[in-house]
Amino acid sequence: MVLNHKAAADETETFSVVEVDPSNRTQALSEPFDIEGWTHFTFPGRQQTYNDFEWHWYHFTGTDYDAAQNKSGIYLIQGDNKGWAENGLVDRENGNYDYLMYADIDFKHPEVIQNLYDWAYWFIETTGVHGFRLDAVKHIDSFFMGNFIRDITEKYGEDFYVFGEFWNGDETANDAYLSSIDYRFDLVDVKLHQNFFDAGKAGADYDLRTIFDYSLAKNHPESAVTFVDNHDTQRGQALESTVEEWFKPAAYALILLREAGLPCVFYGDYYGIEGDFAQQSFQEILDKLLDIRLQLAYGEQTDYFDDPHCIGWTRQGKEDGRPIAVVISNSGPASKRMQVGPEWAGQEFTDYLGHSAATVTIDQEGWGDFPVEEGSVSVWSVR
Image (cartoon, rainbow, N blue to C red; front, side, top):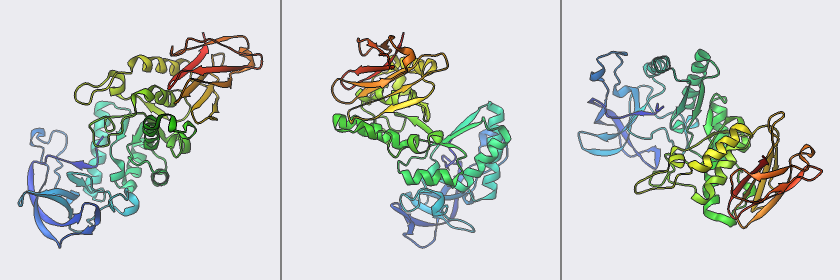
């Protein structure tokens, strides 16, 4: 759901602006002057079927095009109670990152606030959706957003799930944003994605013990929405940072088979991507990992993050269920000694992913030496 801006207006309007520096939106480059901007949204095709609200220039904080002069820029709209959101309420990149693109919505304006509430209620009740993914929240007034989601969940219940795309890997910024919205919705774990990207690029030079450092999964596990790649990070996109193919199975194991975070699987990873920026499909291994998550990835988790090139963990499983032992290597073949419990003594474990043909027999104290192939991941459990 994109609340930050509107594009493709129906008519232009004339209003006063100040041009600002794109790299520092708090720095004015001009005195106030008039522009002709695309800010009047009348929606003639709707014929006021859903509501009769029309958007005007005073419902926005800024825009990026002066039709009278055929000139692009970042223009801060002038008027009573106008201006970017306060610095503590949006990301501080570019001085103040309230403005992203097109006609930037003013979340201080009472008519805007009422219209967004009306639209959200109508949309939820018309479609029957059970949650929102909020786009580009670092560009939206966090005071508004926290209150908006508070009221949505009060009306539709705590099971109405909401998470936001706060695209900032900085630990302090994520801490501050979650605090500012009183933890009312979750955030995508950008830092964990960046760690996966770095790990894939560095190969054996990456210390796997640090894979969760500074991430939401580590610092705020109940607020983390974990992912490996998405539509913004795939090749050819503005935030291109595609995780190397060799590391993707391990990265997905790290989000699908652990306690922390709510994992998301990228469509492009599951089905593959064609065209100029093609990538292979990981459907076969993702189906296996998803099945393991559904059937086995439960219970107490014990980490064995004791080697820079080979890490592992165990999950004890459901009551009367089977445990799993997960091992990842970013270097040569390795093994990890881990305990699954003495009740499994004498049992033979095999790799559910089929990457290793070995069999591991659990000793009397419940320990096993679980191997993993070079630059690979294995998930061991009893058949």
